[in-house]
Length: 222
Image (cartoon, rainbow, N blue to C red):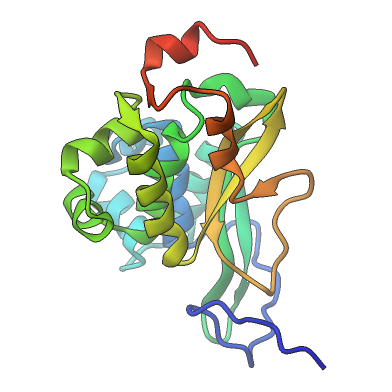
């Protein structure tokens, strides 16, 4: 019998039950906001709650199910798909994350522009913390998140940093490259969404130069 690898954040003795429609774990809510490119203030204003209430939803502190449901409904209205299953006895979530469907795939300009910011949101880290852990500068991390100039080396360092911490990058095949649609925590309990690739976004570098800029990508063809 071959033993399966267990993700470090999972308890192998737990068999998760399906989460209710109204609930979304804090890390998935952070990912959803990152995928939409909203600040906490902007997201809170959109559903008419205070930023303090939204922060409580994203940190898991004193948040009500009503507020979480409102926030989840807001994101789902823009096509966000929440991922993961929750064990309500332990509150442990398997495969938590969020993604966008292929129908809104061209919402983002760069293949990892959404994924890197979403990966940081999933782990709840500040940009400087990521930079130090990935041996990059804060500016390099910002460029990779926001579509500035970057190199393949810095891109790979950042991907490795997140993957080493249990982040799975979800991508869709578009033409001859992979375009990022979301992130989730690695899980052996919950399979990723069908028709999506896991950790394949690096293949985009088979067809672009070492240094890449936003305007160059805009003028390229899939």
